[in-house]
Length: 447
Image (cartoon, rainbow, N blue to C red; front, side, top):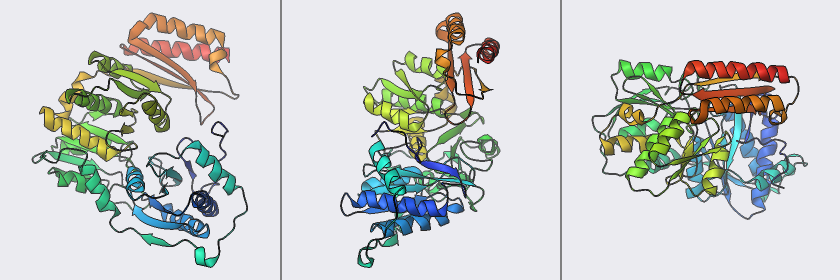
């Protein structure tokens, strides 16, 4: 069953444009009911529901609640809550499941649904298949006496704030540290500023006034330029940028230079090593910068590459019994602290290393030298298995041979668009660009 293709679920739940199937109120009603039926089969329990700040969250929250009630399942509504906060509360409240209404870093007119299991992890494929089976079945309603009830959990934000702070030593005092925090007008707006303020830092908050339409708009982890400007303007020690649902982290040092997920993973990995960790493996993805891989190797840590997507990073972490992994986009998973990618928790680990080492963020990232990377897309009008095109594979091997260990080539078909992606990275930008253009020409001729 796990290997069967899913009809509605992607690698990270169900996502799309609001008003276009399946991101519609009627589908969410059915999804809530289907989810309720699946978890009702496993015995009594309740489901918690959180959301980010986009305007359509109100509509979908009501629809899911109605569907769950029709299936006879109780609901606890969290209101705006970061995705990792829902994962944490699912685990600690012993809920049957956690549901997040969010489209993460996407604009306000998109939305989606993510699920967490009772362990605070992504749902296994088997349960997603079961939910899909019910979605395609006629909807029924339990008798009135067995309808599910709903209530709001008023202290959800406070519980999660305390958890975040608990992931670093309580005796670390960040008094005198000035931080600009960009909440992307998203789900962390009422949480992240409190976390950093309560550990003693001086806080300047931007992107903290959501109106339902401005989530991720020219701010947050996907647009750190505003944060960089504000760090310089306020003469801050560093900046923290989260995305709309709080599972991504990008930072900015005191010079206004962006520190991405790859570099942050290096900093946290080195911190673990300095603390005596025996874990010699970090999980990245096919897109993790080669310069970061080389920097990790210099300090005795191996990088294992997973497919792009935090679900695949998590699978690889569990396979290799490792605790740290993530992506350059800022998804950082610290399994020694929590069960999923968490932007606030990852930022706190970096702050802890700043405190422990006495170094600035700029100094900590100096151990990495990111290689120039060129990514080009080739539009195709038919599905092509690029691995089976002989002349392309010959050209790839020739480029890899000429760059040796100081460069890397990645050719892959996009999973969402009719594109072949050509990525080349290496020490010298001019050489990288030349090789990328050469491969693009060969791929175009071959297909």
